[in-house]
Image 1 (cartoon, rainbow, N blue to C red):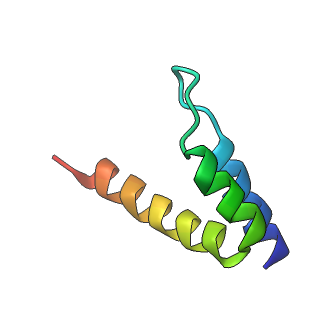
Image 2: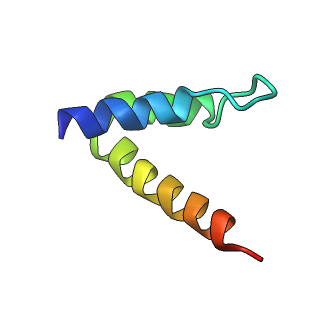
Length: 56
């Protein structure tokens, strides 16, 4: 679970190509203080990427 927590935090703070962060500052703070949040965010982000890739 620690690895998924760190992966979720990395995903939230990962910048887009334009240099903006994926997450807001409150999401980063919540990810550090509430460890289940980045795990759920990671699952949601994977789902959204899957929907984007399978879209016509």
